Structures are given as C-alpha cells and as structure tokens.
Length: 74
Image 1 (cartoon, helix red, strand yellow):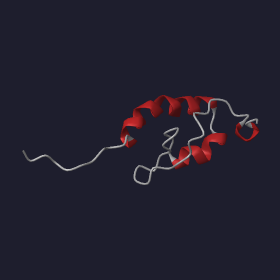
Image 2 (tube, rainbow, N blue to C red):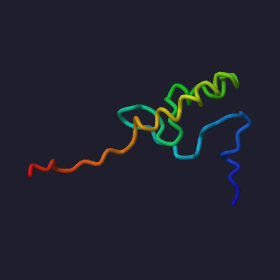
Image 3 (cartoon, rainbow, N blue to C red):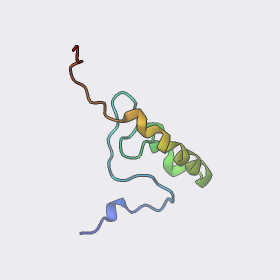
Image 4 (cartoon, rainbow, N blue to C red):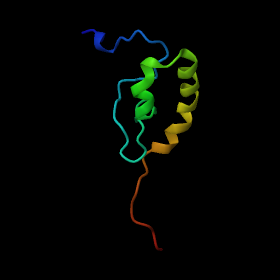
C-alpha cells in the first residue's frame, strides 16, 4: 500500500498524519499548528513556514495530557 494521499508538493510540513484538534487549545495534537496555520499553510512562504515550525516544539506542553485522580488527604 502506498501513501499517495499524503504526498504534498509544499516543502516543510510538520504534518505527521495525527490530525485532531484539541478542544480547548484549538491546536492540532499531531503537529501543534493552529487551525489558521493549517488552513493557510499552502499559501505561506518557506520563511513563514520555518518561523511557525520553530514555535511548534514549545506548544507541545500546552496540550500534554494531565492525569487526574483523587487528591490524597493523608
């Protein structure tokens, strides 16, 4: 099986095929781009894409799963 659907002409895409928008943060949990960044990606210059891609690693902690549970009162 090939992955032709995901072959794109535009360079520098952080997409990793995990496309799901975090309901509160409104960023993709796979690539950490905002909805607006995803929508305009094909129209951005290489420099604009590079600038966005530099910020993506800093967004990962914003959507890290928090494990809940009961507070210990002992």
